[in-house]
Length: 340
Image (cartoon, rainbow, N blue to C red; front, side, top):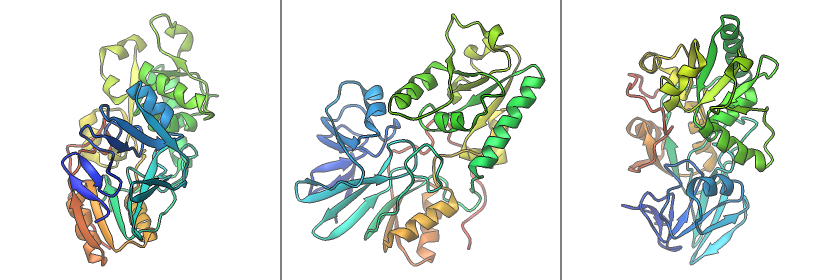
C-alpha cells in the first residue's frame, strides 16, 4: 500500500512521512492550517506556500518547508505534490505516487468556488482518502449570492431594530468568506481579536477584504452603532458580548441545515455556510478522481462508505482524529440515509 493508517496518522513508508499526523512525528505533510490538521510538535513540516503564513501564526517558530501547488517533490522513494482543495486559503489535497501507483489524501475540501480559496482541482488517482463531514443527502449548500442576500438582510433588519448583530464564524476561512459577502454600505464591521488576527495574516498575503475594526477595550462602541460583529462561536453568549447591549445572534455553519442543531445553538438566526463539500460535491469529487478504492474519514463515515459501496467503489473507513468543523459540530444526527 502507498499509504498506511497508523496510530500517529496517515503514513507513507516510501517517504517516511505522515500526512496531517495527530501525534508528534519527524516529517509532517500538512493539508491546511486548521488546528485538527496542523498540530504543534512535529520536527519538520511541509505545506503550500499559501498555507504557511497562517500555520506559522498558529504554531510559531517551526521548521517549515513550502511548496507551490502542483510542483512534484521527491521524498525518499515517493513523489508528492499538493493540489488545491478549495477549503480555506492555501488548503491542499496531497498526491502521493510510489512505483506508478497514486493515492490522494483530500484533507478537508469544498468543490464550490467561494471567491476566497484556491478553487478545488480533481486529481486522478488509484485510491482516494476523502472526508465525509457532510456525507448525507440532507446537506446541500446555497449559492454565495443567496448567502450574501440572507446575511445582509439580517444585518439591515437588526440595525433597524436597534440591535447589534453578532455572527459566530470560525476564525480561519469562514470568517473571511463571510466578510467577503458583507455589504459595507450597511455599516461598519467589527471583529473579535481571534478573527482579526487571522484576517490580518491573510490580508498580508494579498487577499482583498472589506475593512474591519477590531473590538478592543478602547473602542467607542457608541460610535459604531449598527455594526456587524464577527466572532468565534465560543464568544456567543459569553461576557464579551455584554458590551454590545441588545444583540441578535447568528451562527454560520453547515450544521444549520438541521433544525435540531439550530434549536440547540439558541441563536436568533442560522446561516447554512460550510467550507466542506456537501453531498453533491463529495460524490462529484470522488467520481472525478477515477479511483476504484475510496477510504472515508470523519463525519458520516458508516453511512457514506455504505453508499459508495452501492455505487461500485471498494469503500472502507479510516479512523482519524480530524474534527470536521472544529468549533461547531452537532449532537444531532438526522434520520436520513443516503439514497439515489
